[in-house]
Image: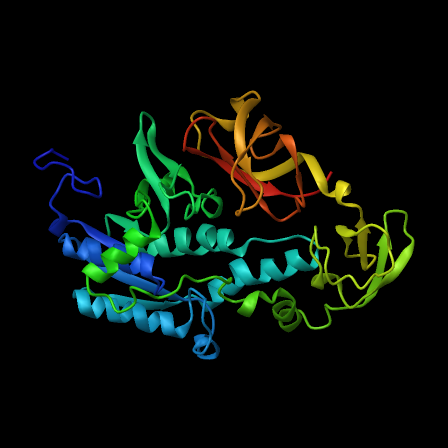
Length: 379
């Protein structure tokens, strides 16, 4: 394409009016500001909201990204800013690609992160393909993460606001997807800046609270959702120590997570006990001292590599990693074992590392995300 124009804010050498962008609109402040800002800049904006489950039951539920109220809010932003908006029914796709695996993984004693699978398998796959079908030049989202163009193409970088950074949930974004995606909020210094923009554009949801829960898990009650999805899953069993001695009973392994201390119902002990392992087949909740939660070596599979060069060609290297979304990256050594598997040696042991969580790779001394994978068993 001849460079008749300077690159616009989305990186295309043509006027905004000739650049179509599909905005994934959740109905929250962030994606609404993205859509409003791009519309004001003159882009050919198309808003799309996904109905991911039966929102009729969710109309009265707050704190979820895909509730019926949020669909209404997204539609109102589109009407106010004057661009088309579509609601797509992805209930079956979402159930097959996200909810079913969540239930099965949880019942297997893992600690799944369904928001990552939703980005990977629904938003950045099916929705992205829909954006291409609509002949959009790119797709924009309200995620707090940065896309930068390096010597070898687009790179993924942490958000400017570390408190809002969502890189943990986006590590599985492929290079091909990254080429098509845009994240206009990634450079913002704070959420306050985003809310100020919402007020500037006159958006009624400028002060709408952030979503807190997984969209299909009301009030964070995983067990109640699992029991509905898999009737009979809450089978009782024994709480045992690491030697197999029975200390008490439980009403279902699904009610427990690695690292849990409260709610075990075991009294009269001198030292506190923590859940250190879940044995689903034996229906055992295994408890032990806090020291047993410490992990130094983390096995990782299904690796998505975003660094330069091939992952399987790389020797071990120093990186930083996150093994849960709420903690800052920590120093580690990455040791590739195959094109999609590796061991990660943590320089400082972490507590409560659990199968089903993500292990996200970051470069040392910088903001670039190098990819990541899934923790698949404990050591």
